Image (tube, rainbow, N blue to C red; front, side, top):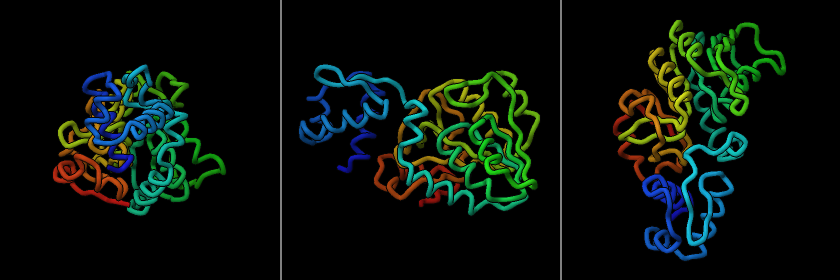
Length: 254
């Protein structure tokens, strides 16, 4: 079993049981004690579990932003390049906050004819350094500042989103699967992504292979309403991928 598949299985076990033992994990995965120990160490480094005597306990589906900015960078860069290549300008876009969408903003800053509506200060900043193309219009949504995510959220953010209509909502979930669709761990983030999806003609989901088949706390876009799912080819070996592919409009593998 590939390490990514093992990590996903461990996360699913933790989501279901909140606490797992080393012995149970060895039996479930059919691997050695040393392999489980190494997997626990790697997942703990990503902020996805806490090792305890005899096993591990669940923390959350969403690692801290500083961790997210260093996870699966090559896969995320391939995904955002693929998204940028498929955009036809002029176009109006919604974009939520996250490590993948910030990487996407860096790609989009090289284009022209964009109207980008976002709650991500990090994404907006990509269009200012160096000074961006004057043909692009960047709209930063108001709201309560989340210094951890460098984003805005809250009722005023949702109300402002609802005054716009976008051609495409570009969203990066914590998890995406066939049953739950795209989901987020934080309620405020889910509300923003849901409003963006509902206010756009199409919803494009950007999710590296580690998010495929996983589940998080709050659904914001059912699988059937995902028009395009961008992920990387390692998703082909991920449990739940085929069921998800059968439900979404199109899958673009990179």
